[in-house]
Image (tube, rainbow over all chains, first blue to last red; front, side):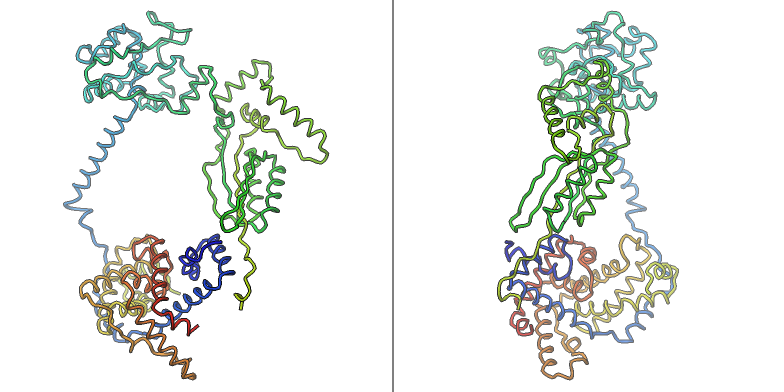
Length: 453
Length: 184
């Protein structure tokens, strides 16, 4: 039961109609069983009436109106110029904006992963030169461009971003930190699609300008004097800690750049390693919507939700029920539904009760080919179209099929394994995860004897 | 029908008659508010005149970010707060102006007397509130502004308006306890 102290803090807003639906319902439910709070509400309303009545008979004198009109200036009102927008402060505003912009540039420059920003130019340099030369400091190293001009073919020189090498020099010159070419040792195989979180300004600029990433233009393994590993491309030399410790300014060296999650997934996919991510979670077009409804009868509406979900070819996951301290019942249903059925499902769900809060994280985007899905579909085709299933999932599927055969009037519900596999291979539209939260409308409890008089 | 946009446009063009429409709409309300802040009729009239003069002068700067009524109340509250800050006046009872019973009750002397006594007590209790609580009661209860509008006028969050009103009424309830119970 909600305590009187907690309710009384809401009573004034309750009298004014300024409470939300659920809070108002809870207060009303409490009032139905609490006589002292009922008296308090009556008192608050009475005070409000008296306050509103106090000034009702106060009217200004007719002379006041004439005084006001006479005091008005003849010229029409014009918007006044605020001194901060012009004159003396205008220059300061511009200077402040410039300073902030410069500060942002510096911060972004420092935060920008030097390993990825300079990686391309640096890697090209490193792979065409002796490792010992690459580990030299800036002061000892001759300028980058002439050396590259000596070693690289003409077409590969043009692949490098024109501003990449100067930026690298600026990094070293301003921070005293050598480039982090030897800190990142990523696979050299150029990906067939742009990395989702490559994030380097040079690569993004290059991608926008030429429609091709720098990763696609990196030196190929056929280049002479370049060591390769399993045909994946040139190997970036990894600096030893003792080598780095001797470099000037090493304590300020930026930390090792950790690729983003999307990049990690793609790299894992490229390297053939398995990660522990759910395939459905990897699906790029998987959306999620949360619908919160206030219903009159939770049990009945819960059954309707499941029936609607089945009718819309959705897979109903877990269902949880809970009861709060006031005795209000709530339930949560999680379901997966094909995106093409999502609007109809949502429409039917919203018809079940009053929508309290609508939280929408992101809507499913238009269908587009996913690199992971393409690669997996290709792999499936290579295996003769048979999907590899684990022993557990195969046994579970057989059990479900058997149960489906024996159950007479049961509607068909796609198995989650099949939904996932179909979503991955793009044979079905993407899935949307729906979270439906049902909150039962608080019913007024039977009032104790004597409170209704 | 009071069309805010039309009146606003005409006032900006220098039409005094449009400003008279604004006066018709807000003169009595702002006068009552000024009376609450000043406590005397002459001061309230002076303050009301200052408020409308300020509205006329600065209405060119109104950019339409809020409702015109909210902006007008904000100007008025600023003038009232400035007046209170200058004069440092404690609230002066002005019962003679405001506790007149309406004609509807005059047939029942007992009810008239009860109402007069309750109005006097409410007035006294209102004067004993803190300025913050009194401001929000003036705007919400006497001027009829919503919580959102009060928040915009007073430049505080809506939750603050809610808590101030609740606390103010709790305080009024304490001060008027016996009268309200008898009246109920």
